[in-house]
Amino acid sequence: MPDNPVSNQSKAFTDDAARWAAVTERDAAADGAFFYAVVTTGIYCRPSCPSRKPKRENVRFYESPAEAEAAGYRPCRKCLGQDAAEARRRQAVTEACALLDAAEETAPTLEELAAATGLSPHHLQRTFKAVTGVSPRQYWDARRLERLRQNLKSGEAVAPALYGAGYGSSSRLYEKARGQLGMTPATYGKGGRGAVIAFTTAPSPLGRVLVAATEAGICSVGLGEDAGALEAELRRDFPLAEIVREDETLGRLTDEVLARLEGKAPDRKLPLDIQATAFQRQVWEALMTIPTGETRTYGELAAEIGKPGASRAVGRACGSNRVALVIPCHRAVGANGSLTGYRWGVERKRRLLAAEAAGGREAVAATG
Figure (cartoon, rainbow, N blue to C red):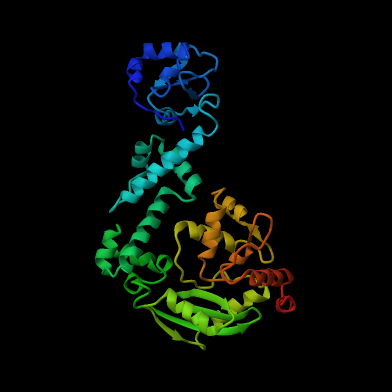
């Protein structure tokens, strides 16, 4: 994106007559001092642009690219380059994110963000979602929730923690707590302090399966060779929670998870108790829509959620999934179809996909 420095030379282009003279002469010394836009083409340029000289009555002058774009003009590809618009969009989103990050009690309105970034509200909303994958409001909600998590993990009491994170009403937080924190604020705390997590383990063709749940639903699923190691990992994830073994009460949920190993489609009504950022939730929801027996590349998933080019971020979101099989992150593959990365091993990923393709447990055993 072009700079807009206020140089000593810019003082010579403070009136329209001097600016027009610079445009007609294609004066490179004026570049950065101002930009001119042409009404009939909808394009704005540097003063030194080699394009055909416009008629004076069709020319408008602006101090910066932001002002020109706010007025509805797009950058000239000849003098500003094809990447100028993209750079400007990303700058606007960066500025909006900084304002949202700095807001402590209430989120800036879309109109306030637009005024600060030099874009129209509609343009900013569309651009923000294209770049980040979420709306400004969703970004604010995710950042506010993250502040709350950090406050609670540091041992802060619930009331100051939630008000310090920007929640003006405790009732509004508790309404969404189970879906966002994975447990109520009072029980979240550091490492799940106060939470009660029940777990069980069961044999499977892929080794031992651990299923853990709060009263709201499944919060963790693990795969491994050793049940003790899986339990130890669960306790590391929630060091201050009360973790108890409940083999009988978790029978139905365990059967549902094991059914994934037989290639059966997941029950969309299966209760989950998981934590996610706005972006992670988008990725996980996209994973849930992949038909059994099929795969999607990380790039395809990124494009599906409206964030092309974010394949690495999609991969990280898959890696942070604590409920394997239920949210089928094993269906995400590399650009060439390779089975890159899986928390419980690429071999298990291969066998899971083979089972889903065949639609039966026999396929899992046969590939072992």
